Each structure stands twice: as structure tokens, then as C-alpha cells.
Image 1 (tube, rainbow, N blue to C red):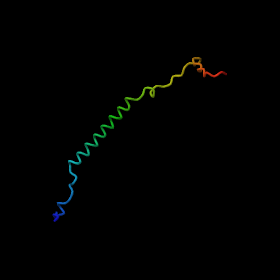
Image 2: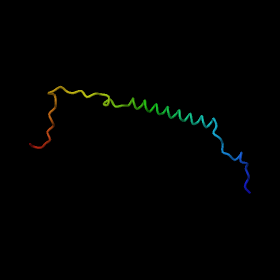
Image 3: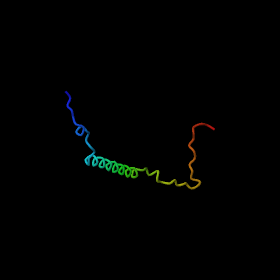
Image 4: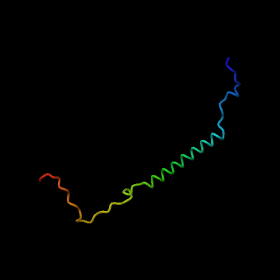
Length: 71
């Protein structure tokens, strides 16, 4: 025979301060990890993306390499 449980005792647990603290702590950890990833991403940028192309003076261009076919 199944046990009869009154309605006020059959409810699920309510959201308390403990659950709220866990959710806030998790959110803070996510923001910290995101900040570290952003800083790391800035630090590892390739130097070639930060350098500007310096044009060579006229007359210093190199001749094209021979293609091996007679003209």
C-alpha cells in the first residue's frame, strides 16, 4: 500500500541562498576565464599583423625567376 504524503511535505526543495551562491560563483568564474582568454589573445598576436609594409626604393626590384621555358 502506497504511503500518503500531505501536499505541503511533497513539494520539491525551494531555491535557497546556497544555490544562488553557487550560480553567482559560476558566473564570476566564467567572466574571469573570459578575461584571461581575451588578454592571452592580445598577447599572442602575430607581429606580422602589427607591422606596416615598407615600400622598397625604385630600381631595387628583383628580376623575375626564369620559368624554364624558352621564349
